[in-house]
Image (tube, rainbow, N blue to C red):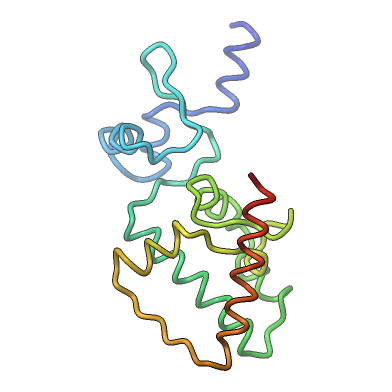
Length: 162
C-alpha cells in the first residue's frame, strides 16, 4: 500500500461505510451523490470517495427544518437571558452540520468561530424558507430598521467572502 492509498483511506470512506454510518442503504448514498448532495465527494476509478467527517446529506425539508431550528435558537438568544456562550454550548458538536449548510450556500459565518451566534443566512436560505415553503414573516415597523442593518451587514460580508 503506497502513501496516496493510505491517505485516501484516512480521509475518505466508501459507499458501504457511509451507508452504515448514516443508517441508510448503499443505493441511497449513491442517489445522494448523483444528486450532488454530498459536498467534496469524488468519484475515482468508478468508486465514490466521501469525506470521513461528512454528515448525512439532507433533502430540502431537512435543510428547512435545520434552518428554522437555528433561527429559533438565535431568536431565543435575542429574547431571553441566555448568553452567547451558553447557546453555543448547546450547539457544541454541530460544526459538521453548519459546514454542510455553508458548503451548499445556505449560511455564512460572521467570523472564524463557526458558532450559532455568528451565523448569517444567504439569499438561497431565505428563498428556500420564503418561496418554496410559503413562510410568512411578520415584521414590526420597530424592527424594520434592525432588519435592514442586518441585511446590509450580511450583504457586505457576502461580498467580502467572494
